[in-house]
Amino acid sequence: MNIDEIFDFTSFNIDREPHIVLDAGVCVECDSRGCTNSCPARCYTWNEEERKMTFVHDGCLECGTCYVVCQRKAFTRWRYPRGGFGVAYRMT
Ligand code: SF4
Ligand code: SF4
Image (cartoon, rainbow, N blue to C red; front, side, top):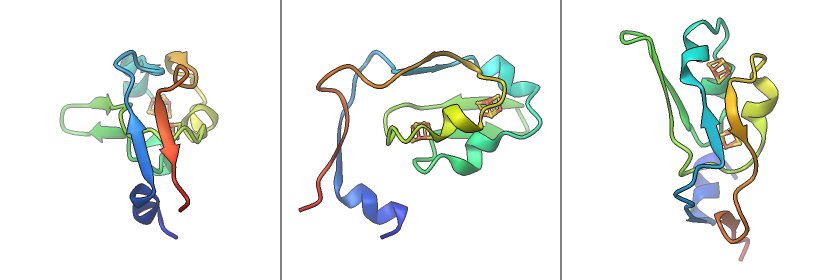
């Protein structure tokens, strides 16, 4: 099963209060930007022309990869969503 197929078995109850808050200013000086190619939900987008990072939490799969790969810990908040919110996986 690839990542696009996973979304077929996934639903979200999106919390308007983001569970991850990124300090995008830190990303400007980052030399790896490993989040952009390791987040399976593609929540991180780097715009080289504008030298700007955009993060959208809506499709987050709560895998924890970005927290591990970000050596600068560029988060002002990183936690799992509040109870009842976030991703739900359906395997049937
Ligand atoms: S790895 Fe961390 S500091 Fe670097 S671009 Fe991603 S979130 Fe920003
Ligand atoms: S927890 Fe996983 S899916 Fe969510 S933003 Fe981080 S890398 Fe992407």
